[in-house]
Image (tube, rainbow, N blue to C red; front, top):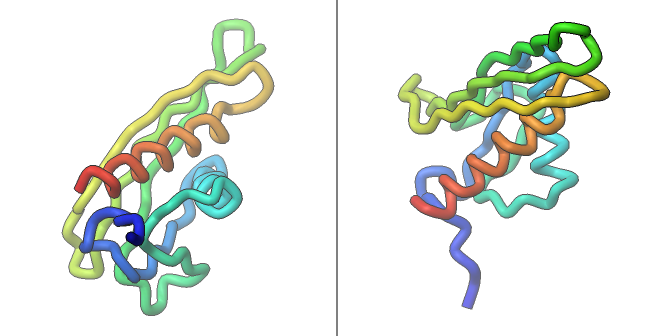
Length: 118
């Protein structure tokens, strides 16, 4: 029996991740592709023909002495008609960067959990 990859809403769709501050879009793409996440859509490099779009914001805040940062992000998944169908936020600290990699990992994990639960 084939494994159900989640929401029929996304099955076979194309997802375009828009540019997000701090390179969050690139880290989310890497987490999906390199992390071999089981998601029911195809990532595309251009918005043309995409059925879904992921956009958001990212902010890195240094601690008091500047030796570490906490990254904060919020993203939303929008269909081609402009309806927000999913949203999530995440934060993570890092001693050697902005926290963007850990935030991307957390957001992709949340997306994967949502897809599986729907």
